[in-house]
Length: 344
Image 1: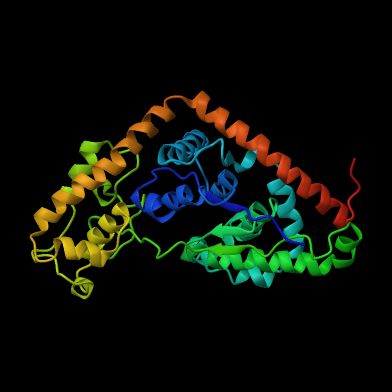
Image 2 (image 1 turned 180 degrees about the horizontal axis):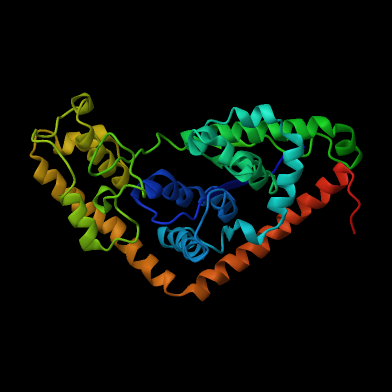
């Protein structure tokens, strides 16, 4: 059978969304809604695989939702919801826990990185996280998932789980009228070169909310004046900008700022260097300030307005959850029949 094309993606509500999240993910989500049916999930169940403050978690969930909307994702055209409101995610995750193999999960590098040396003290949720991610995607029988480098391995696992489920229950699947398997093989959706945004204080480190210096990142909630100040204070070197991309080698801070300009302007690094190469860094920085403020300033202002109206945010999440549950519920009815559960 042919599966209807559907995009699924999730963002963890861990607070302080920054420029890296925007350029690396959210701006791509905005583009995808023009060509695909999309489901965008605030994955709060994934967030609690490590301890979250129960006071901060709902605030962070609403902030991610506000960011989606402020950046241009239409909650009427797409489904925007938080994962914990649709119980079928957890239901399917348990079925997948019984399909996935321990050896598969043992190979997941993110668990090893997040658990560190004290793996015995890590939560089972952190270990089983990839099976829940597979359930997030497949409970909607989604066909495409926009992924970064750090999630490719998890998507491969989702494909393995889908294939094993289809194989394990092939006879039952066919008896319920599904002639070509029940779950699709979700494909990674790559939209051009990934934008890797580095720290404004150290061009060799990825921009991160965990950096103790707020000047290392541009938060989506920063106002225009703060955005401008952070860019002006961003670390650079004394040399003028080169005219060709090769000249950025060994100059991580210059490379980072040129990359940010290119991403915000929808162009390429070589194009930026054609425009600014040979000139002083101060001239380029002033242009980057103007571009960043004009792009990010309205987003920050709209996010602040939205988070001050939690009832509206909750209505978006509630509406999205109800629409998502209809789709997820149909999948779980079929899964229970296929597996052999008795249901009403």
